[in-house]
Each structure stands twice: as structure tokens, then as C-alpha cells.
Length: 224
Image (cartoon, one colour):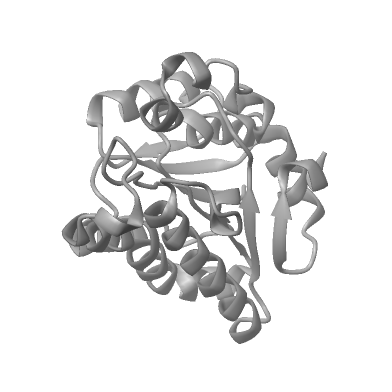
């Protein structure tokens, strides 16, 4: 049975991908900050596969250590947990620098640290890392400078990791806009309601994992 560790798994894309992998028989270790939401997600899947739910913040080194210990055999790490930063989204001219530091800690440092913690298991299994990116990493959207900068950094971390770890597949994927709480916080509930549900994106990620292409950056459109 293959084993995946998914961060940010309590809702949105993380929860949708967990459901899709469970349907394919994957064992799962799920994590998110909200214990109540996380255990709700795990409860939904418990009858279909082996699921461990470990609540905590991926920016916390002790929590990352617990996750790595809980997944000594690992085939897929999904770095999906992400922060948006201050809202309303501020222009870079007035972006609060403490908030930007916190955002880099969550969106760049934490994913890399979790990769470091789980690389021995991923190397042993010939596994894969899936980092969730954004079109804000490559497009100049007004107000999205802080978030976009963190995703651009995560893209480059992924790019270099792919060269340094040839036996581990590394994919960084722009899933496009989705009807999530984060998007609603950024653009408002009415505009976010017009975006596709995360459940429509999860099958594309499932195809990526199954096909196991060479390391690289992908968009949802390219995977459909």
C-alpha cells in the first residue's frame, strides 16, 4: 500500500486530493492546523483506507518531526498548506514586513523543512514531492506581491531540488483558481464562488501522480 503525507488536508484541495488518493487505495497521513476540521476529513476517509490525522502547524519544527516519524515509509509528500498573508491584500509599497517574514516561513521554509525531514523515506521508496504553486508565482497581480513572491521561491526550491535529487520526482503545480476559503479571503466570497470546486482539480493531480512524469512545473490545464 502506497503512503502519502498531505499538509493542509482539512479542507480545499488538500482534502479533495486525500479523498481521491484514498479511493485509489493509498494510506494517508493528514495534517492541518484545525484539529476539528482535520479529524472531520479523516473520519470521512477512515472506512476506505488507513488514515492518521496529526493536527499542528507545519511551521513548527516539533510538529514536522512528528509527521516524519509517523511516515517512515513514504511514497508521496504533498506540500499543500499555505498562508495568504495580510488582508485586504496590501500593495508592496506598504506591505508589513513582519507579515511577509511569517508568510515566507509558512510557504517556503516549512515545505522545505518537511522535505528535508522526509527525504530519507522518499529516497528509499523512489517517491515524489508535490508542491502546490500558483499563477501568482509568475504573473504580476496587483496586491498579490507577497504571496506571489513566496510561491515563486517555492517554485525555485522545487526546481533546484529536482536537479539535486534525481531519484525523487519533484513536481510543482499551479492548480488555478478554486472555490476555497483562501480565495474568498483574497477576493471576496462572491467572486470566489464563481471558481471551480477543488474536487474538480484533484483528478488532474491524481493523473500526475499515476503517470509519474519527469520533474517539472505543471498547470491544471496541462494535466487535463
